[in-house]
Amino acid sequence: MNDQKIIDLFLQRNENAINEIQSKYSSYCYRISKNILLNSEDAEECVNDTWILAWNKIPPIIPKSLKAFLSKLVRDISISMYRTNHTQKRYIGIEIMLDELEECIPDKLDIEQNIELHELSTLINNWLNTLSYEDRILFVKRYYYGDSVKNLAKLQKCTENQMAQRMLKLRKNLKELLTSKGVLL
Amino acid sequence: MKNEDIYNAITEIQQKYLEEAESYKATKIFHPKRWVAIAACLCLIAIGSIGLLHKPKRLSPFVITAYAKENNGNLIANKLTSDDDIPVSVFTLNDHSYAFAFSYPNTNMNEKPHITTIYSPDYDLDENLKNITIAYSGNFISEKAGNVYIYYIFQEKTKSYELNYQTVPDKDNKKYDVSVSIYQNNGNYFAHLNSIKQSKSVNNMSEKEDLDELLLPYQTVLDKLNAENGWNLAISENEKKSFYETYKQYSPNEFEKKIKEEFKKKTIDTLKAKYPEYFLISKYKGVEIYVWQMSEKSYRCGLLEKTEHQKTDNEILELQFKSLSVEETKLIISEIGIDSNNTIVVPISQPYSSYTYAINDEYKERVNELFK
Image (tube, rainbow over all chains, first blue to last red; front, side):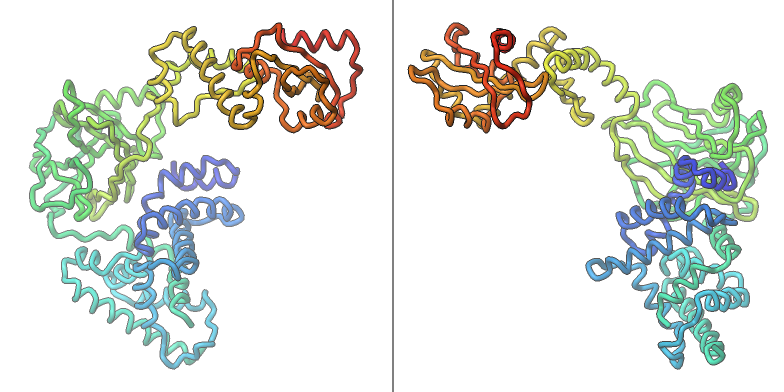
């Protein structure tokens, strides 16, 4: 069933919508959550929560891309899972990812300074557009889909160390952008 | 600003970047130019499921083979792995739909190859056409006994496909859920094994239906006993198999007798634990059954050993705290072995019951009837 038909089922409050997204997107959502949490059971729980959240959000939201919408939901739920449980459990995937992203935060930026989420995403979107095709792919794969540096190295047929250096360069690049824009914020 | 803010901002990145990253899959093991997506349904040569270039990580006790066709027309069979992306070809069927082909060995399938046809979610076809397509699906590959062949059939070529499949039971009756992603890159298709997990449910639907059918005569007996005695006996879903194994040797009549005995034994054991004093009543002295009414159709009883003296009000009052149903009373009397001539039924009223009734001759007779 195509996505538009599935969205129509959601709008009609037809519970088959859940079955359809489950059969179509469960492995996709599971992969994202598993990459983020590195915990199969919790990833499965996040995926199940994703269907419930999608049911509650559509309508009023009518996503342009169901797949992208579900991926955003599963990312949100996965980080919520991390926030709730990280004192008892270690979620190595997201911990490494958050540590890496911390390097992007400009040093001089006031820690209390509140940047609106959409402003920050606009900055990141514009920045992605300036990157080379492969760099953009790698950044999105690493920090959106949570693919490990090891897997990305395998994908690019380079060593893990080379890939880690490449990611470091990308983070530095993002930090420079945020620093330069941070002055204006 | 926190690292989580950047994580959240990344969550909001544009859809086009997500799609771009999702569809990008570089591979240098195979040379995509060597592979073509063919547009013909031809007789092809099957090659055994042997990995050509690398040893994949084993995810399960079996190997899934993905089929592709080189541009010289040769059919190539590669092991599907979670480590690499394996080329797969689009085979065109005579009804102008397309298919990807996979197979795996199953020693349960000794007599003939097993064919499974899976349709993509977008595949919109009536049942008659489906049968035609299945007939053609056998023409891809010379299927061999001992193998299960999976044909994933779709109507429109798109960028990616998700194939979720449950294997047929192996010799240990285990089944596996297999998830495979197929995506397009530069006009060629590649398959990636996402996961193989043992299915949670070992009983498939046909087994369940078979079992329900086998249990039908026993269920009829239970329904009859429930209706007759006001019991609530049922076979729980989890215990159906063991239930059948336990009782399959009995005919329905024998089963009824057996269940009655079991029910009686179980009830007596429970009553013995709850009211041991009732089982100390002497069968030689006999018993006085005190009966009071709780509602139009509900009677409760208490037992006291027959004595020369008249029972005190307090002794009778105490009975309401260890009251029995009529059935339970009969069971206890029968278990102790008291002869019906050695029992006296005494209708009474108890302050515990708010039901009002007059104890006259007619009422006494009605209560006596309960124990005949």
